[in-house]
Amino acid sequence: MSRTPSFARVDAPATPRRRRGEWIVLVALLLLLAVQLFFGERERLAADARFRPVVASACALVGCKLPPWRQPAAFSMLARDVIAVPDRPGVLRVQASFRNDARWPQPWPALVLTLSDADSRTLGARRFLPADYLGETPRAGELAPGQSAQLAFDIAEPAPNVVAFDFRFD
Image 1 (cartoon, helix red, strand yellow):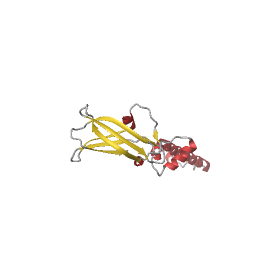
Image 2 (cartoon, rainbow, N blue to C red):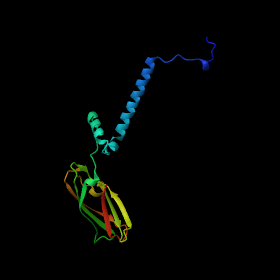
Image 3 (cartoon, rainbow, N blue to C red):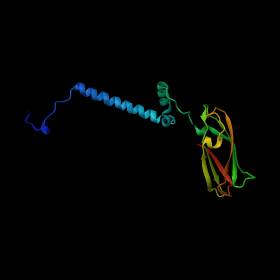
Image 4 (tube, rainbow, N blue to C red):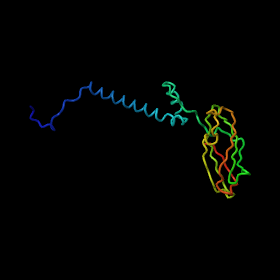
């Protein structure tokens, strides 16, 4: 038995083989973490033009699916109107037609509608998702390049003095 107290004993240094194994395990865990982060954040990364080519290449290797590329600025508003529905007081009819001017198919955009009074004060604003303005009608999930679309739906008038409106794609 050794007479040296346990707190004063010096353990033999780890063998190089043991240290190498520790480094291999550490690197493997870091790689696993990177893969997990990639799969968890791939949709957010793919939405950024800087990272999309890298994410697309990685997904091509492992077989994952990317969401379609979205560029709301590539939609053009062709016609738009917000009118009072004559036989339904307090109801406004929103009508619009727009076109996908991108060179690739895009998912249906979200549509932001802002209603204002004569003094340009915002009386109401809402972001309409495709399910809000397409309704139950089954349609293709994307608009082809150059494809136009028309929509019409009714909303409640937020105040009786609405005189202006603005559309924006989101």
